Amino acid sequence: MLFLNIDNIDSRIANSIIELENDFPIRFSSDGLLLRLYHDKENKIEFDKNNKVLKVYFIKETFIYFAIHKLMNRKFDKSFVKKFNKKLEELAFQIDCSRNNVFKVKSMKILIRYLAFMGYDVLYLYLEDTYQLLEDDYFGKFRGRYSLNELREIVEYGEKFDIEIRTSIQTLAHLDTMFKWVKYESIRDNSDILLCNSNETYKLIDLMFRNLRKALKTKIINVGMDEARLLGKGKYNELYGYLDKKEILYNHLLKVNEIAKRYDFKIEMWSDVFFSTGYDLYNLNEGIEKKVPDDVTLVYWEYTQKDKKEYQRIINMHKKQASSIKVAGGAYNWLGYSPNNQYSIIQTKNLFEVCLKNKIKDFILTTWNDDGGETNVFLVLPVLNYLSNLTYGNRNTKNDFKILTNIPISQFLLLDQLNNLVQDIDVSYYVNNSNKHLLFNDLLLGTYDQFFKDFNLDNYYEIYKKIRVKKSNKFYYLFYSLKKLALILNIKCEITLALRKAYQEKNKDKIRDIILGIDNLIKEFKLFYKAYKKGFLSFSKPQGFDVQDLRFGGTIFRLRHVREILNDYISNKIDVIEELEEEQLDFFGNGKNYKDDLNYIEYSYSANSSRNLNK
Image 1: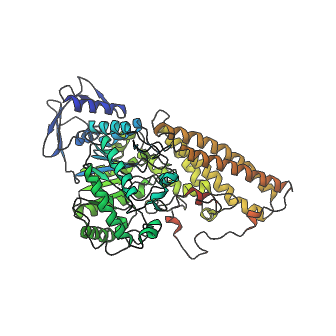
Image 2: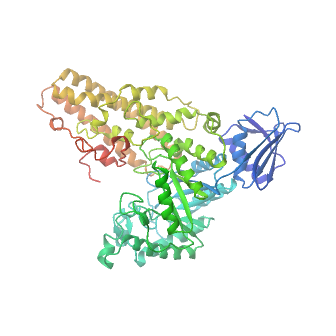
């Protein structure tokens, strides 16, 4: 516990420091250590033992809250001075507020306090159609969209801690949920992509900027434009003829930039489409012939571990294309229900070092809600804290992290093991979402059965036993639900390894045991659902959880049906189980190694659960 006397501090900053008491072991007393703040040209903490005064010298206010975090590790038994050379101009974090997981405003305030405590400067809210357009009620309907008043409240709360709130929106692709409304079909090129060159498209984009300007104070906005792989291949081609997608993107960018300027926005955009032929990102040796406008910033996003020479090659391409560049790394919360913090930390470190080498001063750590937003962003706090310490040149310690959460960092890193397919493999160097594959893998179809072949059944049970978080902790249900998931995966693995073998051997006694295992699996699945729902709804708006209801409910009903089929078989009501009669195939191509199974990610629930479920 740190006791501070803040009586003579500027009231606005003092009130912000008091806000931190909501989450961290700070208390305020006239008998506490006297805190004095000085706006200066360097970030420095100084303790004067003789006068019992803590002096914090800061360039930006965000350092004040970072400093308080670091002071909580110190013993105040002698005088000391510590300087912090901040290596970035802007340390930014992005939370995905689309795709079925939209944080409540009160949760966003908690996140802002955590970011302040780690010294972050900027928070990006990734919004596809989850914000209000006053003139268009269909936009974001039933999606948990933020009202303009809610956005204003978040912006104003960020100001308390000198954290600038910005939005990352979409003005080209990733608008598949919007296109579920027939109203927008006329401005759809194909897939999730807007129809470029259409006046109606630019009217909609104008509404986006117009409304966001009413809520935001920042001048910077990210306009997306990433992963538009099929750009120009649909209605655009029918109406205007063929044009290379990079040219279409460039022309679209100029129009979007013109609209943004009307509302005093300076735009950033994800850069991949300029440098990619398709699904392989940044696989070209050069971008478009034209240079992007000087007032547009390209953001190079990279979430995979690559050789530093490859990072450098891609950055060199960006330098030729734009005068303003930012870099974005990723904290893996998009692997289903569990994160991979260790892989993210190594990737972030390597990318950060290349960033500094190239004198790029803005780094964005992103999170994403691919296929449902199952993993809460607070579960990747180890990555956020690690990047914070990298930025300020501070040493990472276990105690430093525990102050953030009152949970040992080992508990967070344990969650990575839910994606550990093979024993004795370091999860720091491979990334997959096997937790989701195995959870939804059908017992009869067995698409992913081969993932179990070398599996040690004790693995998930050991994780189950090791996850221990106090119920009083605000993150309790996030951990408890994954504890239940570990148990489910353990049961599921055991059944999967036994079922087909027992059927092939016509071992009906073993199948009776498997039926009891399915009974237990259904029971535990219901407990997992209950805990997961509690954790989800404590932080996020309810819109979007309907998807989890459908998936969990469908899984339970499928398990009941499989149990019924097995009962019919052992009671001789049926002679064969047709699905188990079919020969199993190597998912990765019968030994042809189409993909590396230790680095395989499949987000889609439809692909994970069945070969028959149409997207």
